[in-house]
Amino acid sequence: MKSDNVKSGLQQAPHRSLFNALGMTKEELERPLIGIVSSYNEIVPGHMNLDKITEAVRTGVLMAGGTPVVFPAIAVCDGIAMGHIGMKYSLITRELIADSTEAMAIAHQFDGLVMVPNCDKNVPGLLMAAARVNIPTIFVSGGPMLAGKMRDGQRTCLSHMFEAVGARAAGKIDDEKLEEYESRACPTCGSCSGMYTANSMNCLTEALGMALPGNGTIPAVMSDRIRLAKHTGMQIMELVRQNIRPRDIMNEKALRNAMAVDMALGCSTNSMLHLPAIAHEAGVKLDLEVANEISAKTPNLCHLAPAGDTYIEDLNEAGGVYAVMNELAKKNLLSTDMITCTGKTVWENIRDCKNRNPEIIRPVEEPYSETGGIAVLKGNLAPLGSVVKRAAVVPEMMVHEGPARVFDCEEDAIAAILGGQIKKGDVVVIRYEGPRGGPGMREMLNPTSAITGMGLEQYCALITDGRFSGASRGASIGHISPEAAVGGPIALVQEGDIISIDIPHNALNLKVSDSELERRRAAWKPREPKVTTGALRRYAALVTSANTGAVLVAPEDR
Image (cartoon, rainbow, N blue to C red):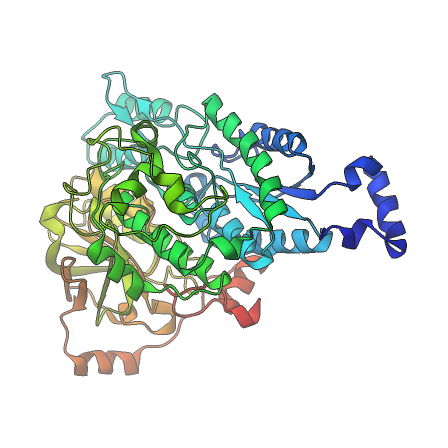
């Protein structure tokens, strides 16, 4: 056992004395040591139930003959961090989570790991750590929140809450209605109920083969979630016995499968940051060119909120992620011969998982669209790429041209939108919000929700070198690369310039001559990022300029 390095032999006598200090018995030390990485805390709604999930995992490990050892991982609530300096810290926690989990796992020589995450950066951070450490590992999340219900019976969720702010500013709803949204949008613990980043990544963990069926979709408040956690604790012991490791599971085929499922589900655009980063840690190249290749042949089968009016709990009842994968397999859009954390192949996992509700999961022969839910756009405004959640764009905005309204930070853009300064046809440009320029690559849910709340979703686009949540709707194009802070073309846009968006043809262009762009580039001067603390300062110094590439922090600087 790997843990023999810290518990067996003459030289390990001091180590055993420290295990004695923990109250461990000789019998416990004779069993595999299983690290349980618990992301429990009392500030993130998606994590407030993880103490129960962690305890259920402990029970499963004990039942299967292992010795469970719990240690923590941090997590930020993106909703609470939204719209202020706190959002600058969200994305960097992915790197902190990966680094600190790697340190704990290797320092203590665990034989296996069970990751217990739930929210936006926590899931990809732990997947990155799993690939790095490469000891038998399995995931179980805390599960999604149930959808809320308004007094009139309409179902609701967090993205509606953000949009209600814009609706109130536009005078479309009153204070009483806003308060009703506040009290009903987030009715239970769990990751927010739409196909936002947290639920996207939990579903993709299933698609990767790193979690048992139901991990991405069983609601947080259901007892099935506790049973899933116990079975996960049992299954890690089987993975240890068979020595099945993350890099055996997360190979190139599995990562391409995850991207295909991403396109079918209509996941968050943030997945285009996280999947390449996970692939990088697993030694696999997965870039934005691959994304468009897979999107071109993968149909979009689900329109979960915010793209539609159905929720993760509905996907669960319809058959979950495996049912979606079964649909894709009908057209040979997945590789199905690889091993997964169940100990079975992908095909053995999904072959009996039927689509129980074709209104929630469209049959592969009758998709919402023949192409995937995410598109990568390129052009002279984004030569290295940009990302849009195509499944959530209204038909009227799939092709659009309009004058640029330019802002150098999120706050100024929001003030202009809510102040009625943005008109139909405008393209709102928010720059210097990238990984280095922000620093931290803030999520732009507030401005895009304000556009929707003001009733401009069908008329205005928003582009940024920041990023977008899975909760964003409309022609919201993020992850513009290179970012403004390193002289990317978005830094050269001037007020009133015409911007051309053509999502069907994957194009994003500034209608300015090459010579004029060169003149502006020659006159452009770098700006110092607005950093105030050690964590942001270190992050801004390390971050790569190609922010839509595989990693946010250059591997040689880790």
